[in-house]
Image 1: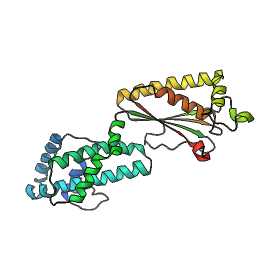
Image 2: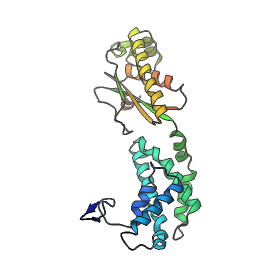
Image 3: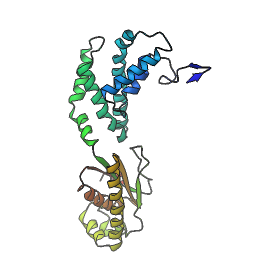
Image 4: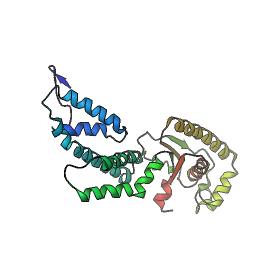
Length: 273
């Protein structure tokens, strides 16, 4: 920011002063940016040229420690992505992991740390060799559709993608197998309930409308390069109609190329079914 014609620092991870290298490393190696190495170098040179107009700068000294801060930044980002993605179940954070690993691979092949840190380098190599982390790269090329069933008594499913929750369909207008004693031991995944709902014209029309709407959005999301779509079905008890509809939509979407389908039945999970 500018104050009285002079530049002042804006922020250093909470308003603290810190090394000059950190902010530019954070910018150029941000996971979502995915900048090519040549552009990173061009922007770094421009930054240093401009910085030299405001203070005495020894480039050799700056560069001696610069990539150490790049490593620090990538470690910080991977820790945040992993914690928010794997432990807090906020899947959209995991979409940045492949980009961080890509930067890490480039660093290990092209940059030497200021001091030897073999244990840390071995940890980096383990990350790059992890099948679980590498699988995120292939997943990130697909559109992930997360389909939920739930009970309105417990509220809507939480959105872990950060995109606002997507579609929510209310199935309470449909015939309710849960009111009939013969269906109470079963769920929307069981044959007696499936057969019953298959025979209901209103269920067929409802599902056909849902599939048409969701598939149109899936096609649009794929064209635009989006990575996440959430679809939720709610009913009174969350065990029959919503489960059935979620399973039927999932079966339909699994036939599409480039779509990863994840299904969760929240009320069944609560009941341990």
